[in-house]
Length: 495
Ligand code: MCA
Ligand code: AMP
Image (cartoon, rainbow, N blue to C red; front, side, top):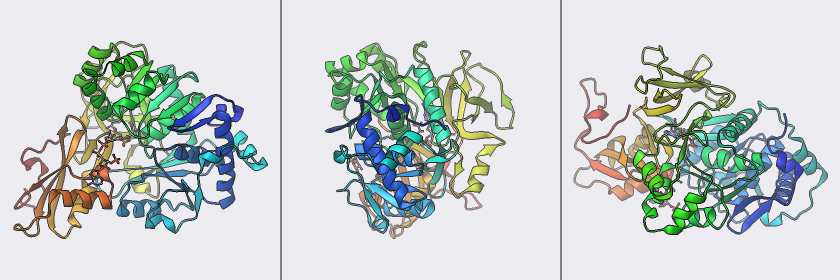
């Protein structure tokens, strides 16, 4: 197939990446990633793990793996021991790419390590690396990335994303957003999920534009990079836009920065209409929403220049077919803003399957249509409005998808817990917050909420920790002993 990154093959002095002090032009990225690609090829590894810190090293490592045609598995550096062990056993990487100073957890120290050092970018490119960088020899259907995502139960599944899916989705977004080499994207998203890595790093590189990553989200960082820093686009999850909206009243520099941007894009969860309105009132700008999933990459987006429609995720992107299907399996044909059905999609943007999980892959499809589990209506103008989710056991918190089941299992592993149930409840900042309902083994000496949060953070990941813990004498169950989550007092359940 043609290369994923034409601008990299051309090489130039144009800026490609900037993460704080680390900045690389296209020419520098081509040589650094080209050399690394040759080293990856030299290991003979079938897959590589990438220690996905929010740094230029991660961007270089992933680009290098793509140049080498070896699938990359980005790892959240905060992943807890159990989740990391699962991902490594499932994806069996042959080598780990990490910064020279990164301290890796025990689970990774057994793997051969390639140090990714962006400061050595001036090094000469050897012949093999040049060939790789120019060639892009891997086929369109070969896997480019394996990204882990939570389901309702069980450990996270590895979503296999082909080079074809990545290219198709990024090109469809370029069409919807008039995204070009002149764009400078600003964001602070984590680099182990699709939003930050595929859209936020590979997106600008495919266009020949540039990305400025803030390292960590801050209102001041956004104001600086979008304003005087010259950024033209901002990507964020709703929690970030909520925090920006909170700050606008007191921050004229932020108002000017958002007002001056070409495009403000929100995704990963619904941006509440109230936050849309606050941002528009203060800046005159509308935030554009796009809708996607790890398995499908991007499905819909509000197109640049279309009238403001808070609450709409826009029409299907070019190449994406989208249908709504009701509970009885019938197509919902109406564009009336009322008739609800599950979103099903097909197109070149779809994943190739879950790694090692043919059962789960088969269950996710209706023929060649992927069942998203998201419930929506369609408006008269063709835009899609998401109204809920089929699974009550999926929680979206801070834009992260989290399965209630995996947290329940982790809580049950704590010696002080006899029974556990997990729900999501509305949270103005996170969208939803994780709530644990537990029956302690010893009612007189229950484990503290903080201890349970640490326990979950250490086993799984910090963003999966419960923010609220309720202690109960028993969980509500029906006559058959089945847990009745809807009977948990005050639990806000969706679906
Ligand atoms: C607090 N912390 C803890 C604990 N308590 N760490 C360990 N154990 C504990 N008990 C730490 C956290 O790790 C973090 O550290 C700090 O305290 C604050 O964490 P927290 O309150 O959880 O969150 P936050 O820092 O306020 O983060 C909000 C956020 C974040 C920045 C919006 O949620 C975020 O980056 N979300 C992005 C999610 C995303 O990219 N989703 C894409 C997937 P420290 O500050 O040091 O880190 S969806 C997708 O890809 C699809 C395709 C799509 O459509 O986009
Ligand atoms: P993930 O599996 O982490 O990739 O998250 C995908 C899910 O995020 C989708 O199935 C939706 O539920 C949700 N999502 C993504 N973008 C949006 C959006 N703009 N509005 C509402 N929900 C969204």
